[in-house]
Length: 336
Ligand code: NAD
Ligand code: UD1
Image 1 (cartoon, helix red, strand yellow):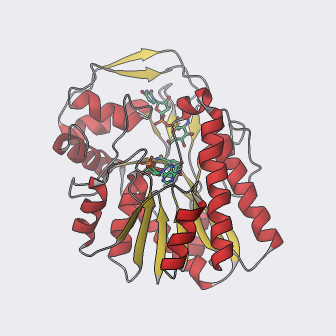
Image 2: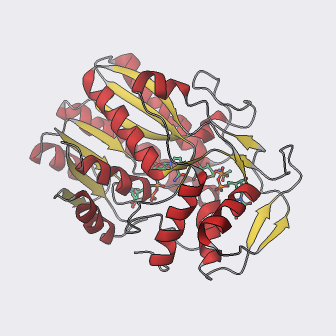
């Protein structure tokens, strides 16, 4: 069977493609390389041990999509392609709505025209908003996103639900990721942020490698055990395996399912710093500062549904996440 992976050259996509190449699925990557490098596609092939098809193109370009569906018999799509920088999305919201929402609509139209109605979608824990109390469960009411990026994920979830309501021969899996960190064991692929990282782990690794002088800890007066924000960090390879489990289900039978992909454990910012220092042997300079606008105190998953229905659970702990993030960063200080 052949799987189209949009955004497959990116961070989570590349790790998922490596795991897909170890199964019997053939893969096609479509990526416009707006937030990745072509080098990652070569490394996916190297780590996966076999070939794949790569199209450099945009999900906003219907002709490109139609060409892919005409040239290949695509059985299902894993849809990672999106812009994901929260701060940037507040500056250029139209670009975010266009790329993420219009891009997904375009993709779904091309899929329907080709008779391919199976899709696994990258959603985010951000859809739970700030009011729900962790552990977060899939049946909780959605919150209000605090930024346009988060709103694109809510809109796309709704659009996919409406598509399924209108035509229940679709098979759709909405995967709500928690905080993805770590890298492939080889140190050959990993997260490669453009410019100054927004997220905690790439910031820590850039401080460790000497690219940034210190980490700013955003707030130490939250209602958490040590006052810093608590999140559910998940290893990217565990997340990749979650996609394969979701894909297997999507291919079996029509339906719409929503799954949290998280570990169910929360770690504070100071816990992550301590775990990273232990894993790397490098001291992380940090300064405590004000809270970051839009942040919440605590966010972690109830991952039970994915285990019950997909048989999937995260198995890599915080130490392994830190070791693997560090190996990637120290072996590739400038990224790809
Ligand atoms: P990433 O930026 O590394 O990967 C996204 C890929 O999509 C990039 O390679 C980019 O070039 C490509 N892309 C973007 N717009 C495109 C377009 N119009 N056409 C073709 N390709 C396009 O990001 P990631 O961290 O791997 O995230 C993958 C998905 O998971 C995204 O949808 C993101 O919103 C979602 N997500 C990520 C996290 C996280 O912690 N990283 C958390 C929740 C959800
Ligand atoms: C953020 C996004 C979320 C997105 C997720 C993964 C916001 C409000 N949310 O989640 O939409 O899905 O990334 O891409 O931006 N921290 C520091 N110093 C730093 C960076 C982070 O102290 O330099 C703290 C944060 O305050 C938070 C924790 O580390 O407590 C994790 O932050 P981050 O990695 O940015 O993820 P989220 O904010 O959870």
